[in-house]
Image (cartoon, rainbow, N blue to C red; front, top):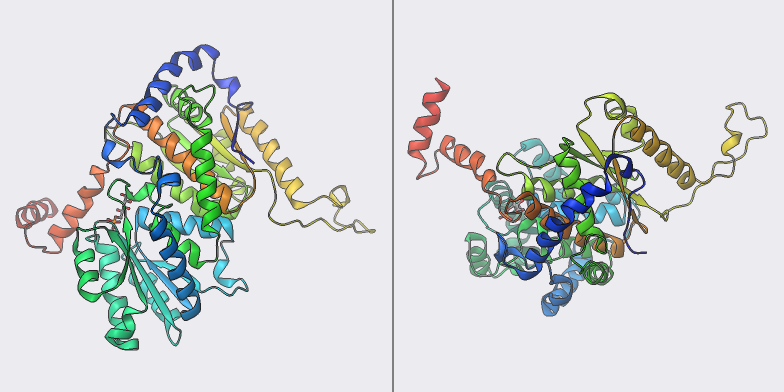
Length: 445
Ligand code: PA5
């Protein structure tokens, strides 16, 4: 099933005149993506990736995944931000948030190096004890502190466990083609390496080896995932917002932003989409949050969060809208059993599937939130599988690029991320940061 944009629950908040007014900008912004003349145009490799990806490397990813599945009980993925969120999102989306606990013939997968918490690392180290471990370190720059420190610790562990030669068979590196410390190091150590293409930034990289190796290790069909992305690329080619749902979505969210709806909440009724929402938040937050502009991307899982944040969304400040991902086909079918005694009064649900009930909860919530003044954009998609993951990724990447250009920012850089790093390096005494350290110390005293 192809992605479909449903506007029933946003229409009451947007006039045709507003849509007509912004359409020109949306169209021009999409044309800017296609003409490759906009800001950050060196990072548009994701646009044609679904058809132009490196087939030789793709085959090597599959072979490596098979080897890892055969040789390892635990697969440790080290990376942060765009170097881990997509893979984790895909695995949970296509299988389950409980992937590691399911009966399966693929390794358990742990994502680490995405924080500096000693406890998070210690937990994974304990889990690895007495088990065969493979590691995939992913860092485009090769210099990011969190994964670099974590990799040093795991490298030492694997070298102790398997010897230097043996460790080589358990370490896979995904990094820049030719630059950076990690690339140099991998060449010296002769590790198997995969490439983060120069023209694809971290948050747009899930359909490169960055995401594909961990996803394939989990036993997910990466051919189908690329097919989903390819079909989406073909479908979303027109620059006319009336004919391209990704451009239309970009236009709608910009209209709402201009009307003071400064928070966009991504909603799903499937807990398995929680990490997908984390990926989405990075995509939009890091791409658009610049020059004191942009929507704040938030997320909820309903109906869970209807019992925590539902009150606020219904009744709090009217500064938000929701974008609901509606999975039309359930991955599992469970029905409510009949009870002849009906002591719990639930027989009105007898025989109904949980999917049906979930769908009714969604429709009820859409109307309730509309009545509370919250516009809702609905994105209909088939089921949670590799194909639809590929489709959604391409849809949102394209919409994000178009939306960023509509906003007047460069959607492909992230200069703000450096601010904390500079201060952290200064405080840790990294050579070259002496002046900054003195300035921070003066501010602390
Ligand atoms: O999207 C991005 O560019 C970032 O989130 C990066 O992926 C993240 O900062 C990790 O960078 P690197 O892959 O260089 O370690």
